[in-house]
Image (tube, rainbow, N blue to C red; front, side):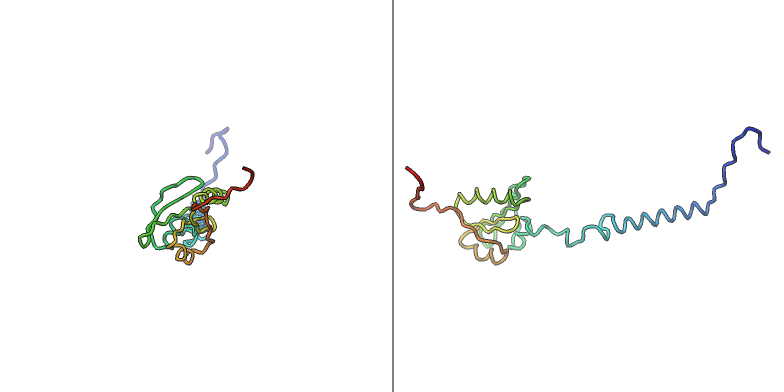
Length: 155
């Protein structure tokens, strides 16, 4: 018998309904993890997790050496490796603008450069053909620093 003035009687909890709700929640969480969790089906594939084809490390690997990173800045990542006794300098860039700025400045020092999409490799006479064959890209020559200089304009 209930005392007068007492609140309404709470409904009885159906334990079977609670179990089913918990099971459905766990199933939904499992599906979310399967598709969108770490390593899930819609996440990054193994192929996409490989190093960027223009990264210093990947370019060094394609050349057949291991790069020692010498500069790791926001606009430049640079490293050096040795292949067949030759030092090979490799630079990668996050933007075309950063690459263009580096290449323009480097050309003032002379030499030859193998320029690809987001990367530059400094070439020597002995590595030019080999690296161009391995990596592709375009060979770009720097300023000539020999003999006479030609002055253009008034004087």
